[in-house]
Amino acid sequence: MRELHGFDVARQATFRDPVVTLGVFDGVHRGHLKVIDAVVSLARSRSAEAVVVTFSNHPDGLLQGRAPQLITSLRHRLRIFEDRGMDCVVVLPFDERLRDMTAEDFVQQLFLEGMKAKAVVLGHGSRFGNKGRGTVQTFCELGGSDLTVRAEGPVIHEGKPVSSTRVRHAIRSGELDDAFAMLGRPIGLLGTVVSGDGRGRKIGIPTANLDLHQEVHPPRGVYGVNVSLANGQTHRGLMNIGVRPTFASGSSDDPQMVLFVEVHILDFVGDLYGQDIEVQILMRLRSEKKFDGVEELIAQIHRDREMFLAALGGQKAPDQKNLTSGARNL
Image (cartoon, rainbow, N blue to C red; front, side):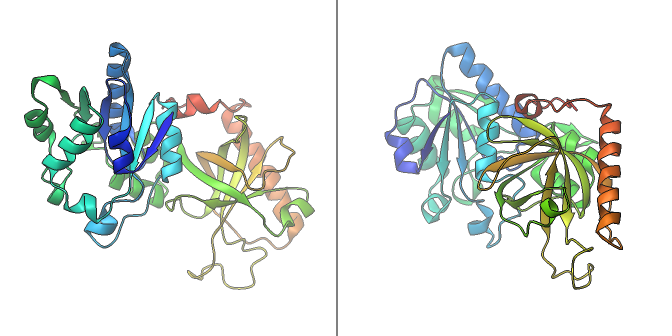
């Protein structure tokens, strides 16, 4: 997938009769996927280029003075866009220039004059341009008969449209089934493996310590996960989100304590330091708890492993493509 960064870079680039969409797409939930899949399908039917225009930062950071916590980082979103079949992504910084640009100028300069878009597909309630005055109708009026414009309706879950706000709440609250239903795939956490204190390796249960790229994650606890490595391999794993109460010196209830994200990858031996890995959460196994000693902790981890594998019926981990396609392939 081709990546173009910046408004002027995109204006000067060459596209192949592009079919384009626009949005932050935080979470890339089922509502977003409906739009993205429509873009890819229309582009393929025309032998054209499927293009998504997104932002490197959330617009609300500038518009409201505070951006919501991201569900998926930019890098994570780009992975999903590529897996869904996008040919090109245009990444724009949402700065004062874009904030002050009228919807008409934005459409004319970027989509019509620059990219020479042949078709545009937008999502439910899509707004853009200064004060959010741009709508689907803006594209219809400016593009005329030369531009195909489509609007995709919302995806409904439990009587309400799926939204990033609802997904964000479900993840934070640990409502995994709701989050899964709205995302169309397991909750994914992308992070870089960083050095830890090596305690897991010393007790015979090595863990990958993750520096998460995005901020939203489920509550503290132990989870059964799939782990997708940079080389394309996928393994089962156990993930702990918490404060390591067995080894912590302070109170585990102290809200100021640092949260750690550690993943024990089953049936894997190797060095992952510095690599980006994605963890897909399949189920919550238990709450984090403090044990009386290391031996008790080790025994519980082995029980966690057996419970997780038993719940899956001993299945092997699916490949990353199947996970991001939205199928619940456990």
